[in-house]
Image (cartoon, rainbow, N blue to C red; front, side):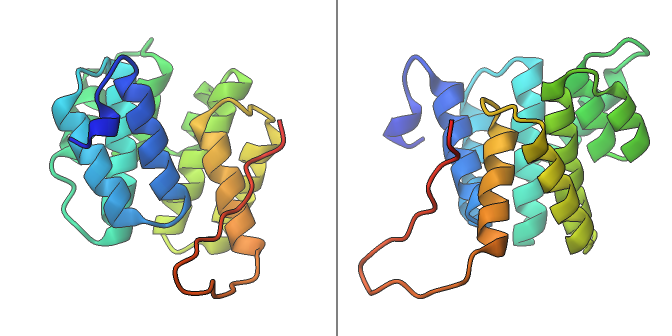
Length: 181
């Protein structure tokens, strides 16, 4: 694992690295980072769902095998009962056990609505529904849940979707400013 992903805040650093790559369309980098995090970190059930979801998204967008990420989501979804927690609902949605409406019904807090709309946006994108994906990304930003990775992802993806594409001079990097907090 990259040295930056070793230390007291491993899952947070790994999550920041994965979501940074996802937001910038660097699917293979996001996939590799999520795979490493899933393999090398001790993640609780909630973090397992987030990393497996990000891994699954990046793999599908990259056209690469998911190295067991979907199987992890299937296992979590299968074990979810009637009173399962929120992240089990995300897992169920990813594997098709519940639909969009059911996920949104289970989203009771602003943070859960933020996450629900983000994952719906990504699933719509995978299905080729670009307009629907952008609609859900706007719904994420409308939640104003600034502290969530999904909010930052949505904000960045919307900025990139509406920003004109320009070439940077060789050897330089361009960056979109972070959301105003």
